[in-house]
Length: 368
Ligand SMILES: NC(=O)c1ccc[n+]([C@@H]2O[C@H](COP(=O)([O-])OP(=O)(O)OC[C@H]3O[C@@H](n4cnc5c(N)ncnc54)[C@H](OP(=O)(O)O)[C@@H]3O)[C@@H](O)[C@H]2O)c1
Image (cartoon, rainbow, N blue to C red):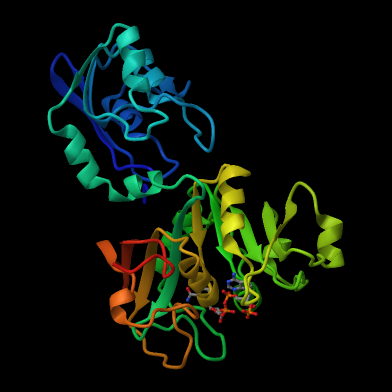
């Protein structure tokens, strides 16, 4: 849940005794240091800032952050810890991100805070954080998480196009939480038409404060007027082929809430996703993209080598037919398939949720 951010844990101490513990729970949520201060009671709830004097030392697995801006909604942790009156910092790893490396530690040292790096902390942190390191290896596009619900026989819809609902209510609740993390959601035209999703984040049935940017592949520029996503307020990006004209309704609405982005088409006529993903990262500052299908869009992400991880909700159901999870692309031999790593499993009602890191970002990469 933290990717593309790292998994980080922290302890807050006073006079050598642990008074608070925290960890970074989800992308966009409080960092471990802030969570430890809150747990220690070193937080002024009314003013939403640290309470000085409750904590004097912090132990943290990663160098505290010092940068501001982007999608970050909280103050840099260095400032929070200085405001809390921390005088000693025990740190596991320096930030492997070259843009931030040692910047936080330098600020502490300049403010007279004693900084100690724990031996072996760097290796331990890196071993625990393959997803974070993978995200650092490319900054031209967002961290891309593919998500689908499937029957036990791997189908994401019936042959007539029905997929609501394959997964349990508990699984769908987690999907709303995934959507409410900052970033964007992408779906293909088939899903817009067949499933008619709102694509808004409604954890526990309540609309989230920060709604994701909803991105739709619109190969022929036409939006069905009954599309729920078209009628539920919020920001949308409609992706059209270069040279294609938006339908008149879209042309009329284009503005703050609805924007159009043109991409070239690939030799097979599909919209090219690479320039879209580059625009989301560089033009919109989006660091995390959730791809919610359908199977052709998932295939395109893999075929263009643009995926980092996948999460699959598997229902104890057999539906048969041909609507597999990835329609298109594919490899000639299983040895060229993409190996999935670091499985995380969780039961959701009757469903099994499995999450994986991709060993490489798609079918296009050279097989090992
Ligand atoms: N179980 C789940 O989690 C889940 C999630 C979402 C959807 N679904 C099911 O999936 C079905 C819809 O699937 P779909 O096959 O229509 O797939 P889709 O991925 O939703 O949409 C594909 C459509 O977008 C077009 N397109 C243009 N550029 C594309 C690109 N780069 N990559 C992919 N598509 C591109 C395709 O054109 P061409 O056809 O001309 O290639 C096609 O019209 C529905 O029945 C829905 O219920 C299930």
